[in-house]
Length: 247
Picture 1 (cartoon, rainbow, N blue to C red):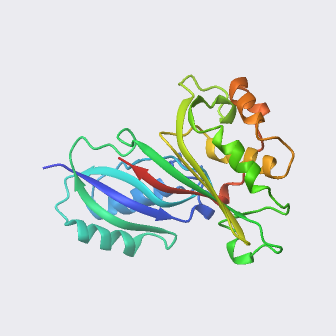
Picture 2 (tube, helix red, strand yellow; picture 1 turned 120 degrees about the vertical axis):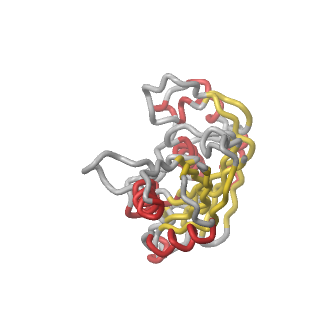
């Protein structure tokens, strides 16, 4: 009897060309590494479905994925096998049997992303793969005002790098939380779905507000423009983490 298995995965995306499997000769991906180990484990050709297609260099605290198999291995045996044979920068924290119709991507109701910005006087060399260092002092109050204007349902085409998309660019952001201490500023973006590079463009634009290069009120005009060139730069990949997927 075919089973549907769900995995909760964390990974350091530093040395990978993103989540999504690419063709031969096109780089190493998280999905590709997992599918290789899963196929050896089950003796089957496994196709893994991920909740989100994180870009090259982006990390995940909790990526969700599922696959179908005829294997009779117990879930704990699968977890042990995967963590034994996967590279050290990919870990499977949980393995579950789920209903046949469960789909990691299509059933996802919301996602939460975390972006980490280092702001100390000197960048920490040990965090360089997991934060984006900002040399400028940031006005957190102004950034919070700007972020508030993005909350709700809007057309986020101006915050999308894919100019040729034919799909709807309307998304709803439920909350944007900005926290800062003396060494790090963290931006958490929580919404029902995200466009290509959307979170990184939001972060890049908020940083420009924090530097005083933009006024918080400009966010409304950027949304209304639906023009990518009106928004800020795309923040670097290494500061972004897929934090949680809700079902």
